[in-house]
Image (tube, rainbow, N blue to C red):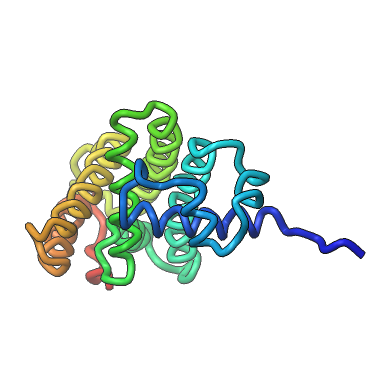
Length: 211
């Protein structure tokens, strides 16, 4: 019988190879031939999965974004009894990519962002990914505000505005850690300080510092 090919698995394998090469040379330095060699498949196998380099890069961008989003979802569902404020802290921590084990992923993500500044085709999926993360943060902020104490609580902040701010802060901290302007510990402290202020504005009980 002819060998069955799991194309989705192969596409993910190729996307991982794209990410490794993008980390080393930037997205513009990635070629389909080099990807084939790194993924240990034939060039024809890559071409059967992707019609051209642009399609391959777009899939890789989605692959990284889905990986980050899935980690956020996993962190949120791991402790279903956690408060909305705690869940918000966990989500922000995952998005910021400050941990050492996520450093390569952070470099890849920012490399794609840099390339997207001059490539509309790459910018479009990145905008979609950021919108999804912003919506998630806004939902968690709304839930935290709804569950907060109502005793003399000021008018709660606008969830979408706060979500945009938090997402931009997380992204900026990723960059500052990568270039060595901040250590991961310093960046985590900045993030926690911002979250503490947000929790106070929401009128919620201050959760323990995220790990």
